[in-house]
Image 1 (cartoon, helix red, strand yellow):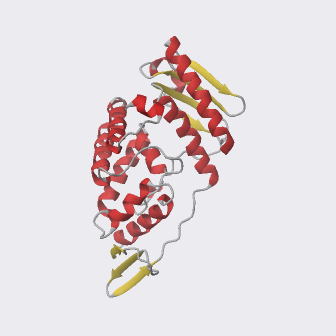
Image 2 (cartoon, one colour; image 1 turned 90 degrees about the horizontal axis):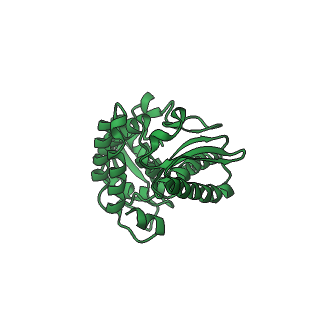
Image 3 (cartoon, rainbow, N blue to C red; image 1 turned 180 degrees about the vertical axis):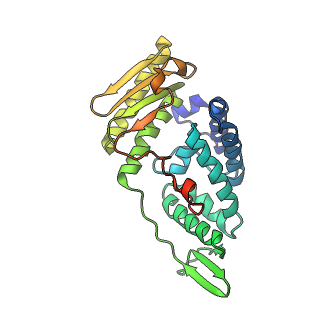
Length: 268
């Protein structure tokens, strides 16, 4: 499977799901909520269905979340599994959920689902409207004799947040597909043109780490410092970095998570 990922050979959605789950099975026991997080991930896979493609695609933060193995990440998976169950109780929701795997439709679908969740948890009976050649609302909601037709307008994520996710995931995905682990720090948010450079530098560092069977320090001046080790040698990375993947200038992705503050938001 990893060899297919390295060479861009055709792979099925089920193959990628199994790789994600296998990765979590190797790490979940390190975290207090890891067992619950792993169960939630398996439930998410079942709810999304066998045709939902979890392969990484820039800008689809849900796919990024599926790979995250840490304590805040597992809490997010547990909350998202519960919300996904609620959403699938809304008629027509499955059509919208399937759009979450496509970068062109992701942001619009996420916004529609987020608003439907808010309405549903506020006591409205909701249903998604089938798209036709004629203009239609995204949602119809009813409550106590009042009917609302809802057209949801989405906004793209802030560029800084999007680039931050892309930079960090480029490091993690590249190291994962080259049988390595990476921990470290971005000193700033990368620029779009730097993502390719990051991928190439991480790839070379992974190859060096595996060849020497030890830790390699990767520094791109003014941008990032990472420690990269073969996948089974995480404990050789300096202790202060073993559970750290940081980026200056961006609020922590799991700190202040609206999911922890409010039970009516999907949150990225």
